[in-house]
View 1: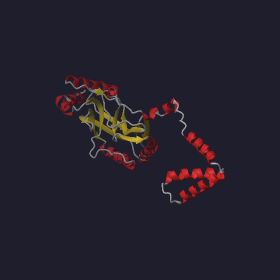
View 2 (view 1 turned 120 degrees about the vertical axis):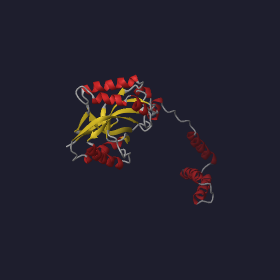
View 3 (view 1 turned 90 degrees about the horizontal axis):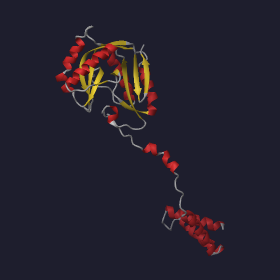
View 4 (view 1 turned 180 degrees about the horizontal axis):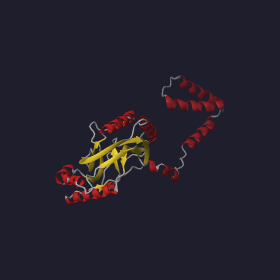
Length: 283
C-alpha cells in the first residue's frame, strides 16, 4: 500500500516538471509502479486513482459577495469634477495615497483691503472678466508637489531642521501683476513683493534643499514673489493688462487713507499637505 501511494505521487511530480523518460526520477517512478502492480491487485489501485481524480475535479465554492466588496473601493478611479470647484482643472491627476503639498507664508488681510479688492473685482467685471476672490491669501515658497503619505513626516522634519535658525522678517507688496499657471487654464491677479526679496530667496534655498532630497520640483529660477488676490478660469493675462490693470493699480495708489499696500510680517511658514497644515515658527 505505501509503495503504491509513493509511486503515484512520483509520477505526478515528474509529469509537471519534465517530459524526459530518461531522468533518474522518471525511471524510479516506473520501477516503483511495476513493483506495486505485483504486490497489489490492479483493480484496487485503479479505484484509488479514480477517487483522487474525482476529488481534484470537484467544483470550487463561489467567493462570497461580502469578500468581493472588500476591495471594490481600492479599484475605483477618482473622477475629477471641475464644476465642483469653480471650473478649475488639476495640474496633475488625483491618485489615492498622493498628497498635494506646498510651502507658503500666510497673509491675513484687513477688512479695508478686502473692500478695496472687491472694488477691483467689480472693475474687472465691467470689462467682462469675472474674477473670483482667493479662498486664502499667502506667499508661495514652493511649487505644488505630490507627496506619498509615508513621506510627509520626514519631509516636514527636513524643512523644520533647515529653518531652525531663520529669523523673522518683513515684506511689502505694492504693485499689481497678472500671472497664469503653466497650463494656461487659470489667470491670477496678484500683488508683487518689493521689499524682503533677499530673505525670501534664502528661504527658497532651504525649501529647495528638501525638494531635491525627495526628488521633487524646486522653485522657479527667477521667481516673482507675490500674493494671489483673485483668479478666473482661462488665459486672460493680456486682456487684463490691456483693459483694466492700470485702473486697478490706481485704486490702490489713490486710496483715501494713502497707498494701500500689503504689509506682511513673516513670523512663520506653513506647509499644507492634503488636509493637514504644519507650522514652522521663525526665530
